Length: 630
Image (cartoon, rainbow, N blue to C red; front, side, top):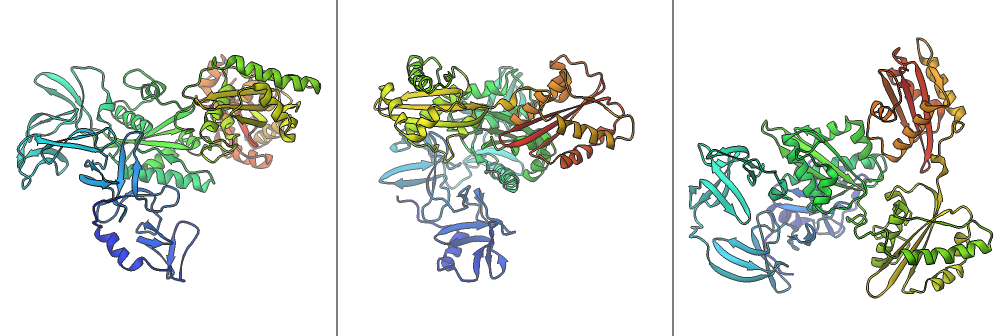
């Protein structure tokens, strides 16, 4: 690939003396610092055939960043290595990072493999019709240059032209002259007005008509029509601050020994975060201004995730946003939830110059969830496979399997069938074990086994061949497996079959006797701590059952409502007050009691009753203490 052969001053200077064998006195410290002569390295460093960039405090920088030359670079989100060449912004848009120095190319031509491309001021490869230096150009949809046309307008390149920021305002110039009134650039409209012809934002009255403009000046609506922030979407706005917040959040996950969140920087999920940030400027609420839900937004953008959670704060900086998010226990819980592995960040500024930060957390998957899933498809084929499996179980005097139908296990099997069509392996395309698909779809199970097959569409032969494999045979006739999900897909050449055998998780069934001794010990410990009248211990009946239902919600990450709303929905009369205390991932009862009694609510005289919910879920212990007035 041939590109412009220029190098920023800072990285060029570093290259001049750094490309050499790593000195014996330099080494990694295990915490993403490079130690050189006993001190943290800063700035650009060439280490073991790769460039890295370190902050002024010696932290390895990851993600998009600018150095002192103000050039943009992309450092690998996992390793911190500087990336070069073509980088996908989303399914259609591309960046190009100079192979010689890693600099993102912007407002410049690049020739790659004999084809010319042009990248706009945001570094995005242009497609279709585009005006460059006053001339009309045509590009194919893959970005390849087609032709150069006539001048669109006379432009003197020695004078001020285009967008110019002066102070805190933006103006549009043509040959040193500020433009005014309506401005159309491509498919986007702006208005230049006010006393100084600045770019207008927010809600404005122009010639007696009401218009709404995005923070980047793009017209969103006129005459009170619905606002569509998607029209003003830009993947590059606040990119540095978004990158910082993601890094801060991943530092917290690293501390908890959780996998890092993958930052979605420029596709539909990033657009969703952008839209929500701008909506929150107008209405700082989970209720969207158009009356629709977050799920509706996902549908509008054709995004299909199984889990999406939203949290938002007002903050002056990414560091402040981190602090505010972790002051919210629901946000902290989701940020540190191992089921979430993807994040998008939206940032917008309101009329008071306050910043709104919104994060969208998802389960990731392939980015398409169960797109294409149809529970009716291959229904006869699935029953045929089930029949062959159950014939072998009957001959071993084992109860028949129950076929999953239009539920989460069925979706999980379909998802795995799609995955093995792209990578035929027990390991998922993301490198994780097949069993994580059950976690993604919230399938409750104690154990599972996966059978996979490719090419053969004679189902009896498939099952016979599985039975010829000792481990597969043992699983097929295992009496612990009660349920089965079957996924089938075809790609025109091959048939792919997945069978997921599942042992149900019976621990999620309510029993008043489960953990009874531990629950009584906790309730006695609370009463020992109280200075007033002892709480009435509830060990059976509705409140005990509801404590169990609540702890199951907590374990599965589904406890969205506060405890009073939860009990109201169950029509339980708790009086005027109800309170809950949650303890996670702990099976030492003394420690659990200490955690619970650290909460001052346990000594509040308004509460008269106590119930405890307990459950072991995914090899972790969860506890919920309910305190009620009645």
